[in-house]
Image (cartoon, rainbow, N blue to C red):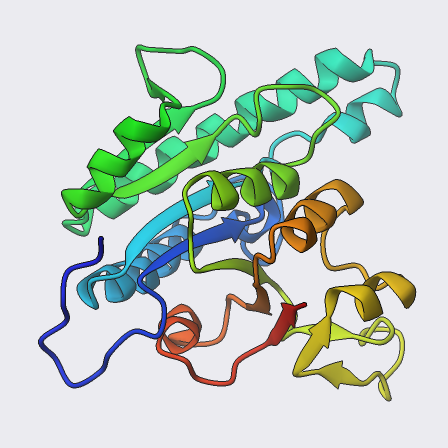
Length: 245
């Protein structure tokens, strides 16, 4: 479990899973890998590890390739989804490289076997890495087509027994309508799963959301790009929107 923090600032959560979108790694453009953005992410992750928090990450691949995008253009859906999973591995390796340059020990585990660049996902091995203070990045989604990286994040969060699933986005929480289109959109500081479903709020895809609801896994949706926001979330500051039972 997480080591005791000897500093003044203490984490509220001892073990967390952070879901990063691929688009976030692309920076303002939202595609490709933006080095400055990835360095900024790594800096925030390093802050959280310094608190003694056990940290796992699931990263998307939408900045490189998205399976649904490919299927809309004639690529068979399963093939497109596998291509998207490979894109998440590229992102995971880029993030691992940046973290290790920051002095943060990191391991990548892939749901698709590719032993030359990543370990296979083995829950007990992931547990061991956490015990040794390493950040674990889960790549290649669930390893199956038709499932999003949101679902992979929900699955891994429940498998690994985290305290909270953190969904990092470009907006500062969940709104009752699109805040870009509606300047009067209301942001929720806290919302129940049932209400989010009833109002058809886009928290995660339905499979991921149902998995979290069935297992009472709290979700915090927050803005990744505000300074020190990951650290603020794990130390219990009121950031973003909390989704609970």
